[in-house]
Length: 367
Image (cartoon, rainbow, N blue to C red; front, side):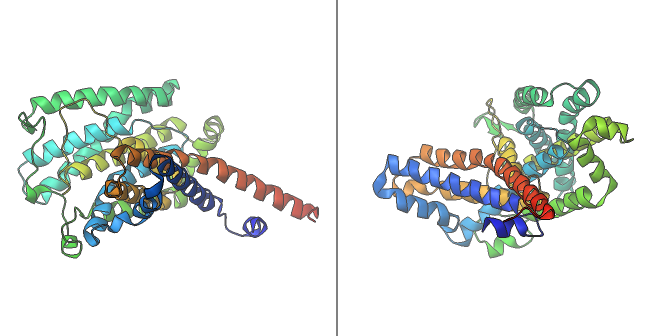
């Protein structure tokens, strides 16, 4: 079997490593359920796999909503990772982008759908600007972007909460943002007629279009080549005439814009999510890292890995039906997310095995 994979013309190492990571994650989750409640472990695993259809198309439709922000975060992280820039600032960029998107949408007064579209674009712009400082520091002073983006997460969180509490979109009685008027929420384009009672809107399909555009940029344009060249070796790219500083700044700005856009879609959607007046990081910003790792930085694969993690989360929310506490759901989800890091190791192992196999084949050393 391994020989057939290695001899294949196409490189399937990324797909195989991602599937292996998912399998390991589910296996560890099942073992955790066996330890906690052996009699319900099989029922829990079955519900984890089928829970996305717990209430039929209503539940499945909501998976699309929850997948939208993490797919966009994954796309943003993947774009920056291609330049070997590890943007860990997703939570902060998403928080700032979400706040700006909700405020602009509720206050610009242009009616639907123009207010919503402008609000989402402003949210994307805010996410990009919040990523600008770490981008400039890394591009021109080579400051570690992991450290600066993590620091910006906390600054963004505290700043966004402070501004929210002083704004006209804050509900003091509930310590959260106000209800976004129904006519100003993200358009559903008739999808609510198919997935009755779900939170689905057009956001996921916009994310799919963005993923295709990003794939085209990375694979078919000069800018995409420059990003990957800088990611392979920044100094060599500079020597070859590529403006590495400009490439790094642009890749991080695009990354921040996509993450900020994800925040806008999340809080302008139909699932009743609100920006809280408490200092809480937006976990979806970190989940985006798992999405891109599971997808091996492939924009198209981010669609599927993001949808999978959203499906898993939605399924997990129903596991109390078989007697598991909410904490076990978080453990299972976390295990799958952390195991996605293994996909990189397995992918690199398979890639090296294939190169070794092809080298031996050319020399006639295979037996």
